[in-house]
Amino acid sequence: MKATDNSEKNNLHSRNLHRSRYDFELLISNCHELKAFVSINKHGIETIDFSNPLAVKTLNKALLKTFYDIKNWDIPKNYLCPPVPGRADYIHYLADLLAETNNGNIPVGSSVLGLDIGTGSNCIYPILGNAIYNWSFVATDIDKKAIENCSKIIQDNPKLVQAISLQQQTESRFIFKNIITHDDRFTFTMCNPPFHASSEEAGKSASGKISNLNLKDNKNEKPVLNFGGQNAELWCNGGEIGFITQMIYESVKYGSQCLWFTTLVSKKENLSAIYKTLKKINAAKVKTIDMAQGQKKSRIVAWTFLSSSEQSRWFI
Image (cartoon, rainbow, N blue to C red; front, side, top):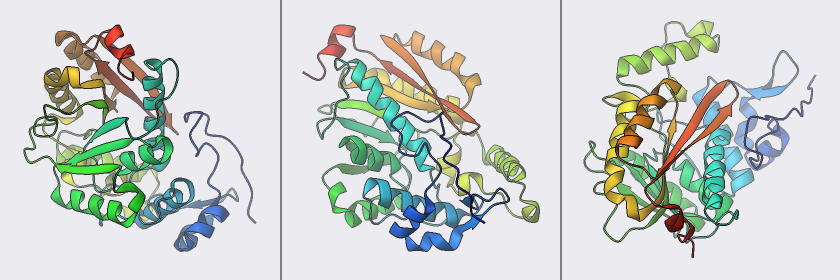
């Protein structure tokens, strides 16, 4: 017997469309293939098996079609499949941050230009930012196959063609170099950096995730972290702190060309070093925005090199 549960996910942003439990009847009506993955758990609640990569990907397809008018979306096998509610939260908190320098009004429209560092094969942040606030994006990645898949997503959804441009970073040791040109002016940058410092560390994290999901039958299977992910999506030399430190140092060169530089920080223990680096490069202002999805805690760290008066003139 199916039960209903209208409890709200109060830790998600107040404007997030996914604060209530998934309405599977609605989602299936828009994405019929989702029906095969929906079952009723021991509490009588409709759900899917979140350890099944295909089930998670199909849920994403349904969410993007139902709430964001994305009719065609897919990712290659073994690439990172992002949780839409959490990704939407980053977009909403960015909107609040921009509103602070725009007389309390969230800036909307194509003149708001974001730079998504490491967009992956899913292109999720540009898709959501455009759907929710009609922002424009430049999306970058070092992975040629990821960029090619993003290009297919854009071509398969004509409303995205003028809103999202793609650029492959050809030198993996750089983040903004080769991407930001002398004439560019970005309202914000955003990034979900690789968490781990090695493939071994990523594998251990995946094993822990499998254990948490009580996947007793998968003890001998190769762990799948976040339901997929290529090396560049999961780890880099220096891990999260190394990636963000490089990003901060590179941002100095482009300080007058961007209102806010931002990044997700998954590991709270990295904050102290990040703040020290931002102080060292004389950021004019630093903000930390706490986020949460279920048991997972995260935060956005944002910094700008612009003075208060320069920030207030950005949208004029």
